[in-house]
Length: 106
Image (cartoon, rainbow, N blue to C red; front, top):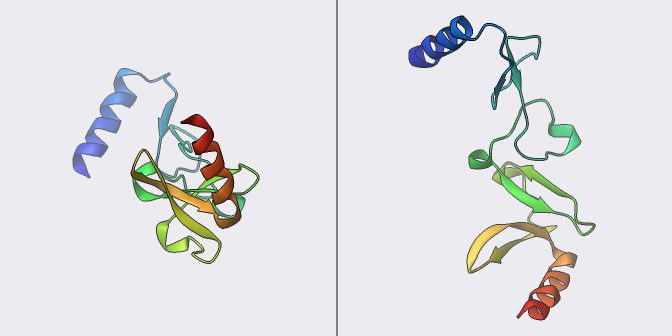
């Protein structure tokens, strides 16, 4: 934590007019502004989510959003793999569509 504060102070001193972005939550009044790296559900937009703390969920209409793993509705989503590796969760009714699309690519 002390290194982070020291680094922030150094950046602020050396680049006083720079716009600074962070993946952490800020009030966005400056000097840092929190940004979202991943799309999130509208009810979850208060804190930016990072790829290493969240999972991807894809809805039937193609909408992609991220949620914490514990918040994935297992009755609605199923784990989906790409290239033999876990990719994220996809809405159950959309799984057949992705299987068909994958079959067409081969």
